Length: 204
Image (cartoon, rainbow, N blue to C red; front, top):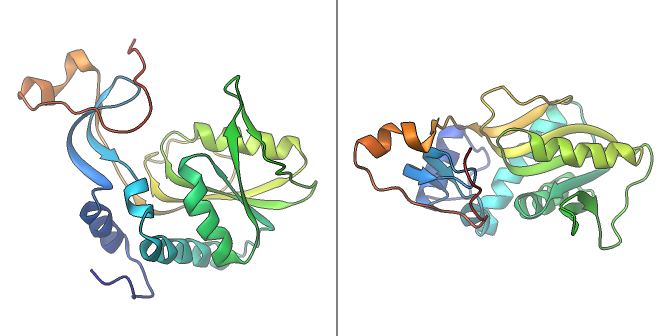
């Protein structure tokens, strides 16, 4: 598929994600321990600078059309680093990232700072529950900044994320999840796969 087009539709993005094995359908064991019929690994999509640039341009256009003009883009590591950088480039502003410290708390490191009153867009690859987005927002707002919105490639919230700012996304994805002892995919005899990079948590 050519990536020289200027408009990225949800259908086109979904096709690109599937072609890059970034959107997988099957039977997966998530890091939470739950089972799901869908798995998203945006790093495989974002390894393609041409695809990342087109997606970020679309997000930047959505932000501008909403009348928002950030001073800074902030993405949580790791998922928000690449899309955050590219979105910042498209918006013509600096881009930085938050990361977890040794205690597991989201914070700014590496000399990154924000100034009181700065207007910020948070960049994510996927927004699933909104938890990490809200963690980043609390860090930034605690330093006096104003979070204008979150922008992501994929929205998996189903509209259930409790966010106090607009949520811009290029593609909504609905994924079914099941407890491992009540999984229809298991009952159907479909082998389960553990993808991803995060260690699996015990399910309770």
